[in-house]
Length: 120
Image (cartoon, rainbow, N blue to C red; front, side, top):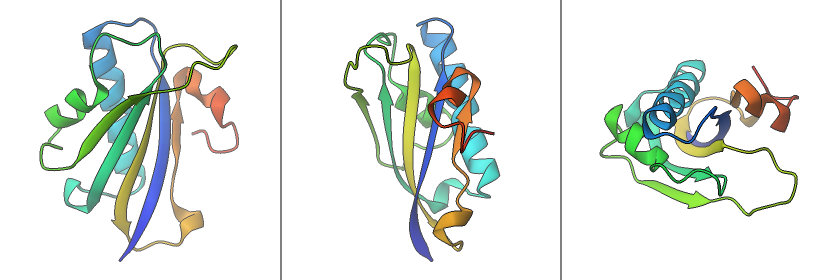
């Protein structure tokens, strides 16, 4: 097994707790499914949000999905002028048996604009 980093992001329509949780679950589920992972494979995850998201922590939504034993952290992105608003990003570290270029990074909804080369 090798440790790999998996990136992903998703946009929110509004900064509301239930919507944040829904979109975070969508993002995490897609990362897990597309990389054939279970929570036992995940070492840690770092979530970031743009400064306009204050309704809750994305890690709270991940814990609701069964990530309670996985170390999770949240942080705020730097406020770059002109950056996309209401974006949740994640970098997940997992044990995987695939080469680095076989890792599937997931960019959903409006976050596709961040990495069109990697978007689903």
